[in-house]
Amino acid sequence: MKISDIRQEALEAEQRIRPYIRKTPVEFSSYLSQKGNFKVYLKLENIQVSGSFKFRGAINKLLSLSREDRDKGVVTASSGNHGCAFAHACHILGLKGTTYLPNYASPAKIEAIRQYDVDVQFYGDDCGQETEVHARKIAEETGQIYISPYNDPKVIGGQGTIGIELEDQVDRIDAVFVCVGGGGLIGGIAGYLKSINTNIEIFGCQPANSAVMYESIKAGHIIEMASLPTLSDGSAGGIEPGAITFDICRDYVDDYVLISEEEIKDAILFVLEKHHMIIEGAAAVAVASFLKRKHKLSGKHVVLVISGAKISLETLKKILKER
Image 1 (cartoon, rainbow, N blue to C red):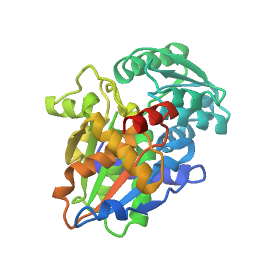
Image 2 (cartoon, rainbow, N blue to C red):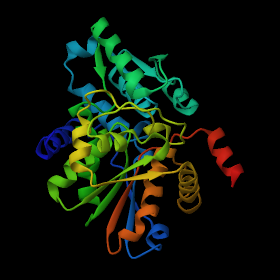
Image 3 (spheres, rainbow, N blue to C red):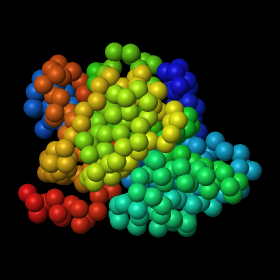
Image 4 (cartoon, rainbow, N blue to C red):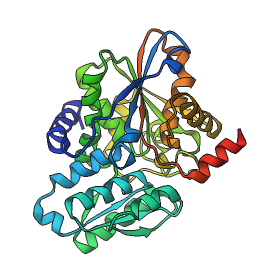
């Protein structure tokens, strides 16, 4: 997709989904800004409907379907947050849905999905390479509509509405840090913001234990690679073969930052202590990436996308106990 195409999808999504989503606030972080000569803002998608940015893309795709296609039933695959968003959107729109999750899905996210009347199935140990492929195949066999968590222009456009909000909320943006899994979030944000100002730097943030997009960009094509366990479960796993987000991330993401599990833990605790917010591992990856690159950001106005809130109580307790 070209920048112009992403911008158009985002603008159409804005008109389609605005009655259903929250315009999430931007919070100035004096704590992070005091760490150097820069201004840092947090885009709080952790308080978006369903607990993450994923609701934007899911509801946009579902609303774009014809009544006939909706009535066939819808199928998705997710490592967790997209599944929550999909389930909530299906509930709002009265659709029959099935969510496929990888075996490693977070208990907190499984519980959140099961609040709604959707069928929950488990398949595979890698969301991108196994669960998504299986779910798409099932949809094709049953004649249902497959809703990708990232590999779809309408989903990317939905996530791009974050860029539209940021344009209105922050007077000046020099750099944006975004966690990367399949690439839908960063693709939508990068495409829209770069349509306004090509000089805005977009940083892709990934856990070192599951840096599939980064390694794929290095290789020049989508690769299959094993992911190690990570607190950033929302971004973990592979990328669906042929995903349109690969080209977007290759062309419009300026740099990548890889983060260790210890750095993720530190960022979760930093936001909890200083901003009194509970955030999940994928959101913490963006914070940790900023802290790792802050020496290169003097004089800049920086946005960190706090992508989601769903961390299990047991995981949080374990992190607190270790500290």
